[in-house]
Image 1: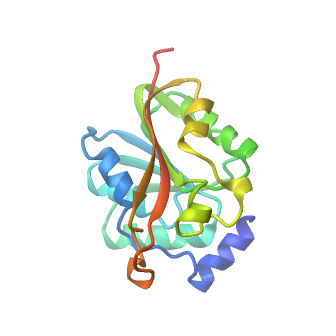
Image 2 (image 1 turned 120 degrees about the horizontal axis):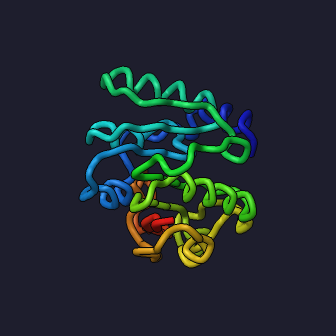
Length: 203
């Protein structure tokens, strides 16, 4: 989907996640010392807000202006200073070697495009910086919550780990868990995600 499709989803309320963070993301960053963070495809800002609450200096990127409107309003209510930017991740180039943490959470686009984003994420990290990637695992389509709808935009932890060239993979695994939201609507359904954590190498 393009940015207009996503804008309409946010306007319709079909993609407005609550402001609490992904449980997996919160666990992944719990023991990290706050520094500079880049949240790629931030949506309505749930993870960027969490990082800012914990003292991180956050830059958050998304191509859907309607999502960023929600994110900005939430940050304003909490008096959190976050640098929200409307950018197309495939056209935008981040500054190199400046971030202590880069997130990519639930970005589902064709694999060739996804690899471009991975490359940019690695380049944005300073040596020793952390890369955290979360997404619906390919198996989630048939064995979990059914997301994403198409296999062309799904992947596995091994796919992601194998595509990284500037980072050392610390963890890459498939995770089964009750969904963060709307779990009561579908009792007994598990969300199957892939989780990758890596550290930028000294170049």
